[in-house]
Length: 108
Image 1 (cartoon, one colour):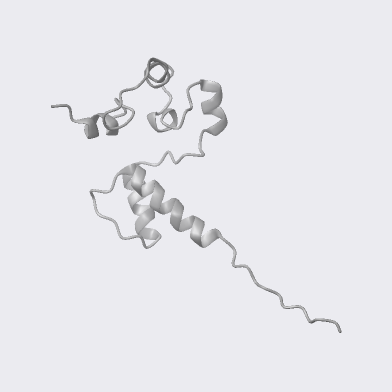
Image 2 (cartoon, rainbow, N blue to C red):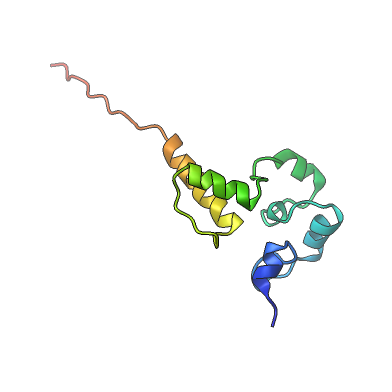
């Protein structure tokens, strides 16, 4: 039986039950574009250079440390992708400004 989760975590498959297309194989294995970028549709070096850094290049251990620092409850089973998602959600919630409503006096 194929261990799709292992293949995905190693960048050897696009997702569980979904192998890479020929174009994606070229991007991952020949151009050496990280799998997480190719999964988002980045298939050329030019496109990769434009978005490089916008997707976290941190290791799972670094992400786990950041999650703990942010006060997010996690377990060692958390995947790198799920850690990125919860950290981004936490930061987006904290970064959103609170709208203040200003009541205007009605002129008569």
